[in-house]
Length: 372
Image (cartoon, rainbow, N blue to C red; front, top):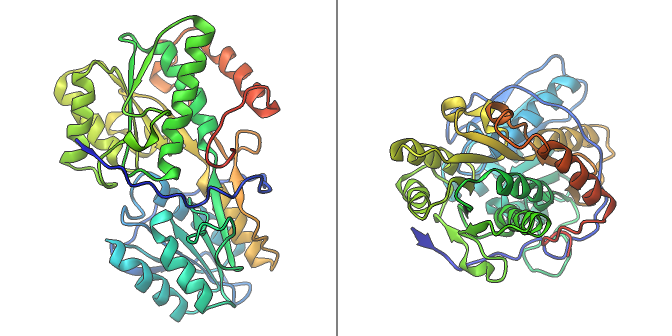
C-alpha cells in the first residue's frame, strides 16, 4: 500500500458557479489506444467539429473517460456532425493529442481529467479562437481563483453530495462496522468522494447512535489519504483492497477509474462477503464482471454535461461559467442497489429521499472544495 501526501488545490476557489440542467446517454467507445479516430452521425450541418482527448485510462475505462466519450458521441449524433478523438496512453500523449486535433480542424476540444489541465491551458492560450472544456478540473493552475484562459469551460461535479448518500447507505448496511475508502491519487476531484462518504457515515452515526468506522480517509487529516499512486487496475490497487479486507472492512469504496476492478478481484480472491461501490459510472452496467459485489455506485453524470457543452458550442452560445453538478441539478447521484435491493433496510430508501431533499434545500450542509 502506498501513501502519498501530494495534493493538488486546482479549482478550490470556483464556488457558486451557475448550473445547467442536463440529460442523455450513449453507447460505449471503440478506439485504438494512442490514436486519433473519427466518427460520423449523418451529414454535417456546419463546420463545427467537436473533439476529445482522454486521460491515460482510455475511452474504455468503464468510468469517467468512457462517460465523456459517450456524451460527445451522443451530441454529435443529435447534431449530425462528425467528431474526432485522441486516446492517451500516458501523460506524454496529452499535449500532442490536443495539438493533433487542433491541426485536424477541431473547433471544440474537450479534455478528460485534471491530469490534462496544464496541456489544456497551454493549448487554449495558444489558440484563442478555439473553444475548450475540461472535465474534473477548474483550469486554475496558478491558483488565483480564475480560469487560466477565457476560452475554457470547466465541467465539475460536487460528488460529495452523492457520496454523503452512499456513506449513509453503507453505514446502514455494514455488518462489521468498518468501511474502507481510498483513491488513485490525492487530488480534490478524487478525495471529494471519500470526504462526502465520511460525512454521510458521521451523519448516520449521529442519527442512529452508532459507531461505524471509516478507514483509508480521515477528514481531519486529508493528507493521510490512502492512494494507490495511479489510476490503473494493477497489483498495487489489488493489494490496497486486500489490506483493507484484512482490517475487517466489509464495504470497499475505491475512487479512481479502473481501480475498482482490482478491488473486486481482491474480494473474490479472499472469499469475502464484502461489497463494492463504484465511482463515476454505474459499474453494475459498465463492468458486470463483479455484479454480485456491487452495492451501489456514486455517480457523476458526465455524459449529459458533455452533451450540453457540445450542443451549446455548436449553436455559438457556449457559456464559459464553470458547470458544477449537484444533486439539485441532477449532475450527481447514486445508482440503484441492484442485487442488494432486498438486502438493505426497508426504511433506507425513504431515509435517503429525505436526506436528498434536505441537501437540496440546504438543511443538511455537505462541504467540499466546491462548496466551502
